[in-house]
Image 1 (cartoon, rainbow, N blue to C red):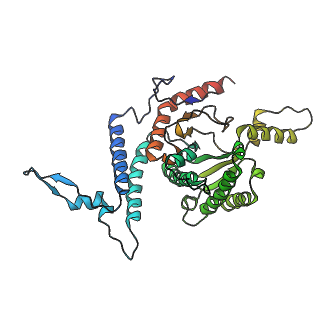
Image 2: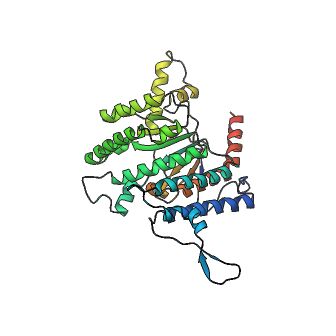
Image 3: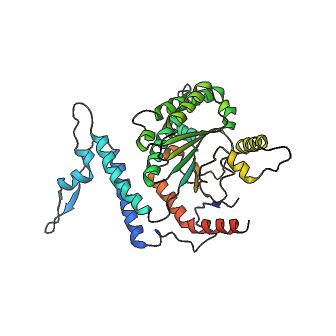
Length: 354
């Protein structure tokens, strides 16, 4: 596999391949400023309605004074009052966050923006144990609920950035070997969240996105299978970005499915070409992933998109999936931009020698 493995030591096999963004100090500093401001603002906003003051020094005075004009702009949530029993803080945070994300993404777009990002959402159960979320044994999927919220945020960031395809590894065929109670809980949660994705205020509606479910769907419980089919049917004509959910999936199962379908198409003793397999993959018609991100620091692909990841940049950031945030996504794109030239060159060399 010609995949480029992400390493924290920075030991890339292509030391001279620099991103256009990273090679410009002024742009990098501006990106750092925007990102730091956004991150600080987001952290501050989560502290609730605690009164916050911003002190600035007057030109001729050594003592600070409170500048409420600037505070109203930067620390808007601390000054908003509840109206009719409902807080306006969430709406204000969303508006300011959107503006700052637009600044970030416009700068990132100077370099190559990935068309397809795939995620191995690893670490939901460890997150639940770490934060004691499933002390109630009747709810083993509590970590996955937090992970779903992270997925919705990540989808929004990707689509705002201009990423056309997002693929997530939601449930492996091997996961059916887990405790039956946990599997059933995850099936129930999956149906609930699929239905939630079809509501009017969902991220799919907002971006006119289409959803695919890849895998051996016959292995799913009937309610989940019907919900998945309904979601695909309802979004099949959407013209926006694409979300692909790998469920009851392994790459070996996908390759086996493609071989069997190719054999059925061919006449007796007719050779099977690579193009035949490509056409019968679950991923047919979708671009190969530019980046595969596996959270929690694990470096295994775990039987995910093995056929499609020849020239994919593999990354394994430390945060567990529910902890994955905008700053991790931005850093992942910067890392991709840093190696994009090398991967493009290597892909061209391989295709030329075919």
